Amino acid sequence: MSLYLIFKDFNVKKYEGVHWGYSATMYLTIAIILMLIRDIAYMYRLRVLTDNKIRWKHSFQVIMLWEFASALTPSVVGGSAAAFYIVSKECHSVGKSTAIVMVTALLDEAFYIFMVPLLFIFVSTDQLFIHGQFNFFGMGELPTQLIFFFGYGFILILTTLISLAIFLKPELFKALLERIFNLRILRRWKSKASKTGDEIILTSKEMKGKPILFWLKAFGATFFSWTARFWVVNFLILAFVTGGDQLLIYARQLVMWVILLISPTPGGSGVAEYMLPKFIGEYMGDFSNEIALVWRLISYYAYLIIGAIVLPVWLRRVYKK
Image (cartoon, rainbow, N blue to C red; front, side, top):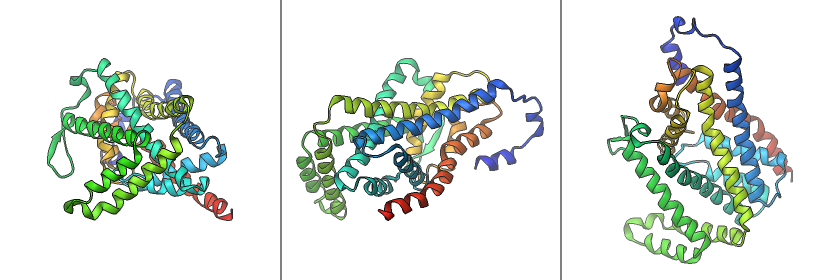
């Protein structure tokens, strides 16, 4: 989509005054390094969650395939099913694989829950939310602020409930789920609810009793991976355009992330390229489409290429075993 917009709005005069120098090259290089840091942090987290039973080489393959699967599935669906399959082939344990995928998702949501209140200390709501409306699950055009608080509230409630279920009363949570989904209007999803309850119980058995250092390492890796992921855009803007409120750019990406989470397209493709200029276009100058394109090339399309290369290698290895 970004490539189409570049050619559609192509104007050679826009590039006449552009001089790609040392600073631009340095910022672009940092953006690429940040993507590497993100992946290394993910790999480290996977090793922590598996008690270092997965080697670095195999951890790299798992993370690349996990990202590959996420890029091929709608954001609202995610790559959890594929992730479970990939991890299960490495761990050879249903309980361990279920726990890793579920705890990974909880850690990702915990980062978001933790960071958003901090942003409100430093960034005012007038600056944080753009003046625009977006279609939300067919309910019509809704303000960005309303969609954000709805999404944040949903993430907060869901993460809290699942965390309490895992670490306190997993069996009670399963029984409650089955009772709720025994209602006539919800009965068609009862089997899925029961399966979710089983996954909660398996995760609880795997993760209960883990030392505090285990959780500090896991959340620390999550913090580094997500922070690096968001900073990529900051440094791409610095490469193309001088200046800008970097904290506000970072904060608006967190707001945009909620909308990308409910995107119906694979990996948020198309939606992400469209949304980025909407949220931080004022800091992207005349190069909003170019920045959006480079951003998606290194944060989305790169994983499609790497995943396609890694997949046959991984399949040969795990099925050879």
